Image (cartoon, rainbow, N blue to C red; front, side, top):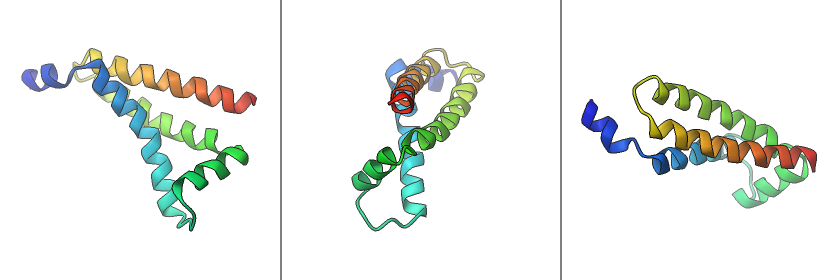
Length: 99
């Protein structure tokens, strides 16, 4: 287990994981709703209806779960990357909420 932690305990891997979880949530919502348009038109509609920030907040809950799982299993740099991307998403959500 120690070699696995050393191999994957990189901040950039955590940042990629943290950035992809909210996007995966958006893709799952898009697929579940059987929307006829493209994914980018779905994002534009959600942004104009002010729903995109709500869906991204749901994705950040997934980031929290992954963060806690990696933090409690001995990783040190991986959770930092997840936290960094979560902060960036949080700032984007605040911007969308204010605007």
